[in-house]
Length: 53
Image (tube, rainbow, N blue to C red; front, side, top):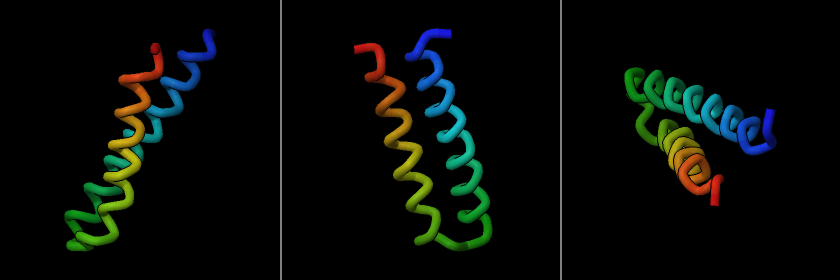
């Protein structure tokens, strides 16, 4: 497995988990604590989009 593919899997897994975590927190009404996972999701999406450059 290529090094970039490993990082893509890590970032994708982290983004999926953070999306789930923020969804659970939003549904529980914890709006402020749901912002950190959203920031993590945004960073992971950015890295997934720019990892091949």
